[in-house]
Image (cartoon, rainbow over all chains, first blue to last red; front, side, top):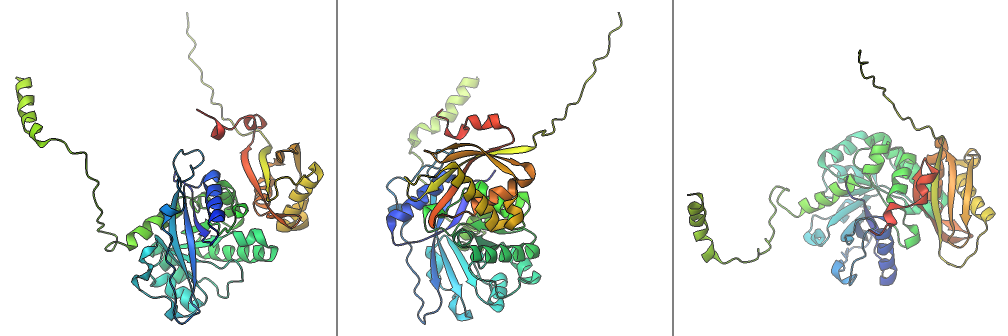
Length: 266
Length: 123
């Protein structure tokens, strides 16, 4: 079984609070979290925030409950697009492990599904989605391996938002039939986090089947992370990395080894 | 002596329990807020009512134990109401206008299973 991930923890300036949120995530059993930087495309000159190096966040990363391994932290950027010009194919996004886009209109939703080189398409949680998710762009996105994200924190905060979140989620589920969906928190405080099994159960309320609901917090998130990695490679086919140097052995001793083996068999 | 051929019996264990038991605890922002068992149950019922309306508030469940110091409890609910109760707990986010969270530690159809937690065992 795949490990649990929560790919949406809002980046906040308050470092201590962010740390305690990540600690809570580790305690709840999430093996990977992503710190989410949100960029509104409103301004003329869009400023892409520099992600904080993950290593600076903790001296010692908290241990995931039941795994005895430290939690893995990624960086993620969410671009809110209200106009087609807001999303650029720039290299500016390459600092982030995961790239998400939040389209505000139907046209942009279509473009995001079919052409944008992103990993996640966000579904509105705080307002009624102003358009209907059509089958053709959604199928296109599924084919390209792009995932849809529903965040649940808004539903915890407010009862009206709860209505919108559930309505938008069910709207999406009827179109995508439970495929390529992830459920993430979008939490800013530790008390807004929920455990992975709670979310798998919440997925049932959103109209997912039991298997899909569990996949939404585990395997699908893994695909997103891998999809994010392939963005940095040549079409996801070639990936180069530095090989760790093996502990050096004396090459002089290696040549007689064959000889020695021969004499032994005699 | 005629040996009787061994006969096999296939036993299929169908879950006979009509209840599920949940071990939960409530996390509050202010750790020393005291809460009575009645208030605790009312909080859960209002969570159910928020999400599922009057019909949801009528889902039968029991608070079997409640520990006032640790704010932990064991709930018993009919299998049919488990998903609803659990999702209502998940989406409960505030108590007396202060943030709170229900942490579901264990869910099992057997009460005995809640006596220990393998995840907290020190090996």
